[in-house]
Amino acid sequence: MASIDFQGVHLSYPVRENRGLTLKDLILKGLFLKPKRRRWTQVDALKNISFHIGDGERVGVIGRNGAGKSTLLRVIAGIYPVHIGNRIVEGNVCSLFDIALGFEYFASGWNNIRYRGYLQGETPRTITAKMKEIADFTELGDFLDLPLNCYSTGMIMRLAFSIATSAHPEILLIDEIFSTGDIVFQAKAEARMREFIGRARIVVMVGHNLEWLQEFCTRVIWLQQGSIRAEGSPRDIIQQYRDDGALQRAAA
Amino acid sequence: MAGELSHAADYGYRIFKLRHFWLSLVRNDVQNRYRRSFLGIAWSLARPLGLTVVLTIWLKGFSLSPDQYVTLDNYTPFLFLGITLWQFVVESMSVGCNTFKNSAPFIRQQPVPLAIFPIRTVLASAVHAGFALIVGFFILWYFVGLPPPLVWLAIVPGFLILILLGVALATLMGIVHTHFPDTQHILDIVLQAMFFMTPVMFPPDNFPGRGRFNMFITWNPFTGVLEAIRRPLLTGHFDSYDGFHLLQAAGFLLVVGLFAWICLRRFEKDLVYWI
Image (cartoon, rainbow over all chains, first blue to last red; front, top):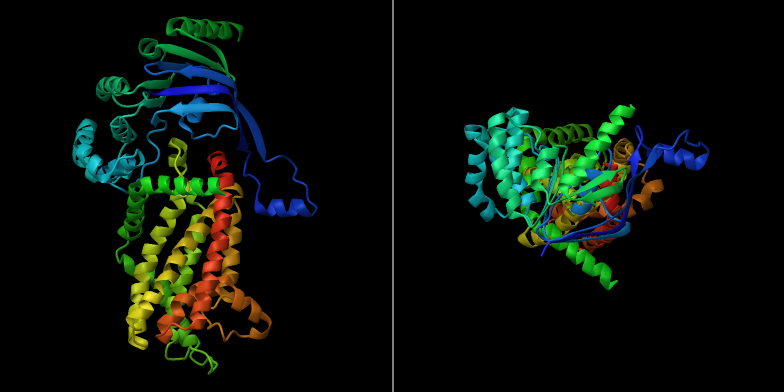
């Protein structure tokens, strides 16, 4: 049984201003020179986040840019540590964030399928069994023999998407990956995405495609400046969000 | 204490589970290094070979003290092996500085035990050093002859300590450089100075102006690491002095390794915000 439990989670992290504190500055500061301005700023990204997501739920997270949606996903994934509050996640997690990153650009498409597969927990035997199916879905053909620095962005997205959706996660976290790819691939990708989502027990997705979220999700959480503003049925929350957006535009 | 040990065991297991990932990246790094160069491996050997030739010619008239193991006859393999081993240490630390920054896309995608990145970096350097060492063994055979099989066995612990030390140093440098971006520059200067304070070019018993630096050279932890491997190969036997070097190297590894583990435990979770 997969589940995600957050109780009173606060997340504050340091962000480096310009070039950051150097060893030289640290030593000089210790002697007699005081730095003119602070090099690190604390950002309160999440404030008092509490929710429970159970088996079978598909949760959408919406909010303005900078609300903390991607941060929330990364906390669920375990990438950002939690120091205040409790985070209890049961089930193996697969994250689809920035899927075009983390490739070895001098390696071929085939080798990159292997590397990404290994990172996702595959072994040489299991990835070899999946290689043909992954390669066929990309429709990249002989390009897979060439290094990735020969690929276009769209081709890299096809490869990334194909590899990412070959996993069998219990908890799936998706951060706005549906934005690129040509029109033919998008239709194909949507079908594969539905099948992939169908295999997961819990899905948490962040996106700005409200129609997609309304169709797919069983619940929607609206984040505003790091806090949960509202949560409930997709139709209701998305409508509230839209109304709020219209209000903001009218006021501006 | 028990909790710490069980955490360490669990961490080690997580690294082991991802072994296909980081081993395949090591293979990728090694291929990248040699792929685009016409002469391939030969280019990467050019530096230690070139340095050895130049220094051997330049130091031909250099007076070597009679009561130590390096002579004009075995100076060339002494130099080449020293430079190769030192080069591995330098690379581990210098390239290790950027090991986490370069792996930022992986670190931001999913939680992985971060030690796999310095392991990847150092193993790739170890493969490269391995190629150079093979050439070094040919040079050793030509000038002095190869030592008996037991000596080869005796230097295996030295090699293991060297690689583990590389990983520990790369981890430390990676953490420090990710937080303080000028670390690599400072490190390069420090290592350049260390090159002249470590018996890479000069035998440990015969440093110019040795009097003042005697204690430093003897107790320089890198001396132990180098000599534990090099001296038995050149002398053809393993004696108590080599045992002392091995102990010195093991002690150094223990201290650095412990410090690296403590820093990793303390800062690993924050590293994702620094890269």
